[in-house]
Structures are given as structure tokens and as C-alpha cells.
Image 1: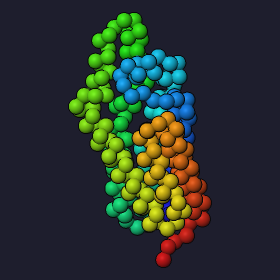
Image 2 (image 1 turned 90 degrees about the vertical axis):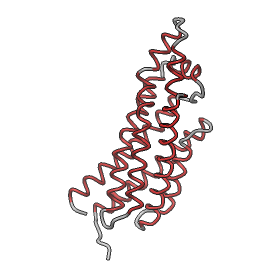
Image 3 (image 1 turned 45 degrees about the vertical axis):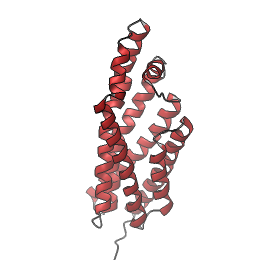
Length: 215
């Protein structure tokens, strides 16, 4: 592993672990999510809403760069179409999620304040960001791309040979649990993500410190 590759891999995996840590902190601080526009407005009135969702937004941005670091590690010795598709799909899924993640801490608290002042029309604005045709398409594509990307990353990690195989399983499970059925499963997914990315980063850091060429 040359110096530039080592730098790209290490910085990317640090970003991936930091994103996982921010997800754990953000979800735990935010608490249970919401399932309808009125629930979103009630949640936005909480004093922890903006900082918690801002932490999650930063986590998503770091995660996108983290995907690059993981991809660089999985492919710096040998090409892998699976790892490449995993990187593309995972990054696409997160990029498509960014508009909603930005809307929540920036615009939703303002709408919640207007709603508390008696402006009932803001419900329609919130609904448009969650239930409109385009929003549903974006959410659906984002979810599918993220899940397939995670599965492909799991396969690439499993096949790579230098990483603990169990990390591929926990990595995939963590992403599947990130689409919450309950607050507990969402938080569990974030914790599993932190564990799997942390172990991956630690192993890669040790390997890159004493690189060994494969035959």
C-alpha cells in the first residue's frame, strides 16, 4: 500500500467510524422517530430536535466519504466489481437521503413554530416532503440503493480475506436495522454499525502500518 492509498484508506475509514459514532449519539439523543406529519411537527418543537438531526446530517456526509475509504481498501490490490457497485449504490442512497436530512433540522422547526402560532397550512408543506409522489420515489430509491449497497459491501468484505468475516454480517444487519421498525432496532443498528466499522478500521490500520504483499 503506497503512501497516497494509505492516506485515502485511513482517512476514509476514520470518517466511516466517526459517522457511525454520530449515528449512535444522534439517534440516542433524538429519541423515537415520527410516523406522520403532525408527529413530525410535534417532534420538531423539542429542544433536542435540531442538534440531534444536525449530528445525524453530519454523520451522513461523513459516511459518504467513509464509503470511499472502504472501497479503496477493498480494491487497492485487486479490482472488485462487487465493491465498486457497493460504493456507487451506497453513496447514491445516502445522497438521495440528504434533502430530507437537511429539511428536518433546517426547515421543519420553522414550520413547527408557525403551526404552534395557528398556521394550519404548514401541514400541507410537511406532507409534501414526506408523502408526495417525488418524495416517495426518492425515499424508495434511496432505501433500495442503500440496502443493496450494504449487501454488496458485506459480500466484498467476506470475500476479501483480510477482515474478520463476522464484520460483513454485522455490517449488513446494521444497515437493515437502520430502517426502523422501533426506536430500539434503529439504535441497535447504529451500535452494530459502530462495532463493525470500528473493527474494520482497526484491522486496516494495523495492516497498513505493516503492509504485506499478497502473492
